[in-house]
Image (cartoon, rainbow, N blue to C red; front, side, top):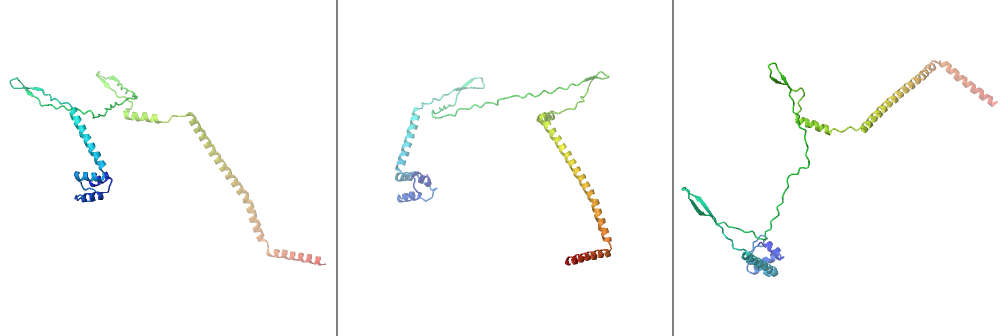
Length: 257
């Protein structure tokens, strides 16, 4: 037994076991993997855990008694020998004793696990595939009376391609009249909305053009007036300023009187 195992068994530190054995003139290394002989193990158990040693002795004695009881209870086994005939060259039969056969009996305390029978595969349902249609080859009589094979004009469809076509046809969503009507109504509303939007754009364009055409004559008139004002002589402007000053002086003198 190793030192670490013995220390765990008696619930003490390994250093205590090393010191105890040193006191008994047994020197061992303080290493968990140090191997201790059986007689030294008994000394340690007697000192640190005498109750544990007594329990082990009792268990060992009980095991030996049970083994002896089982050996006594087993009946003696008989060895059966059979004579095996052997053919010789002179067609005479020579009996040769067979080798002894040892019969072993199973102990009653052996428990065998029950055998579990596994069932086979269960068929839940069958899918019947359509039988392939046999191609009928038309027979035509030739000029010599022989039968000629005429190939069918229909294209040949491979079984794999046919299965893929059937699968695509099955995966294709079914048409719903209600959803189609809603989709048609939605498209009509969308087209109507686009037509109204185009109409509004056209009206805004026409209004813009009319406004621009209405503003154009007023602008031309303003430019014309500005040109005429520039053509007025400077002398006329001076006369108007003098007349205004004369009027102001007359008004002022009349108010003073």
